[in-house]
Length: 185
Image 1 (cartoon, rainbow, N blue to C red):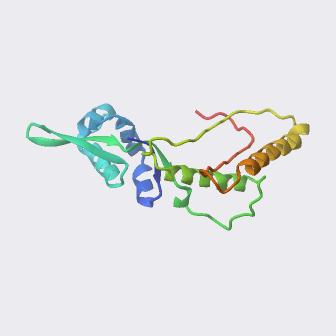
Image 2: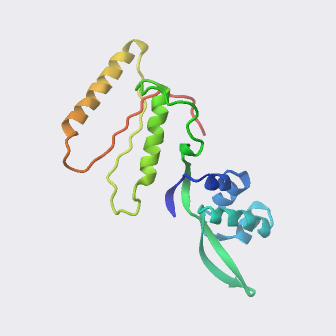
C-alpha cells in the first residue's frame, strides 16, 4: 500500500467522490473481503462489491488475493493508498492566472499546487528520499510584520545564494507563510 495516490484522472475522482465508496475505502485499510466490509457497514455484499469493483477499475483498490469459500472464489481487497490527493488540474484553472505576486493568496495556491504535483511525482520506491518537512507557528505583532517578512526573505535569499550552484543534487525549497485560520478536525 502506498502512502499517497495522486489522482489526475476525472474517472478516478468520480469513483472516489461518493460517500459510500469513501466508507468502503476506509474499511479496506486492511485486506478484507466484500462480505467482511458489508458486515461492518451494515450493507449487502453485492452492494459493497459494486462499489469495490468501481474502485478497482479506477485503480484506487487492489485485489490482493483470492480464496475459495464453498466453491466460490472470493476476492480479498485492500485500498491502494493510505491517502488520496486530487490534482487541482482536475477542475482546471478558471479565469486567467494572476500576476505572480509573492505576497498574494493566488501565488500561494499556485505554489501549493506545484508542491503537491512534485511530491506526487517522486519515486517512493527509492530506498532513500532525502527530504524535510517543517511546520511551526510564529506570532508577529502588526508593527513588526514587515521586518519579519524582510528577515525571512533575506535568510532564504542567503540560502539560495550559498547553495544555488549548478553542481550537486537539486532540491526544491518552498516556503509558505500565511495567517493561521481556525483549527480543523
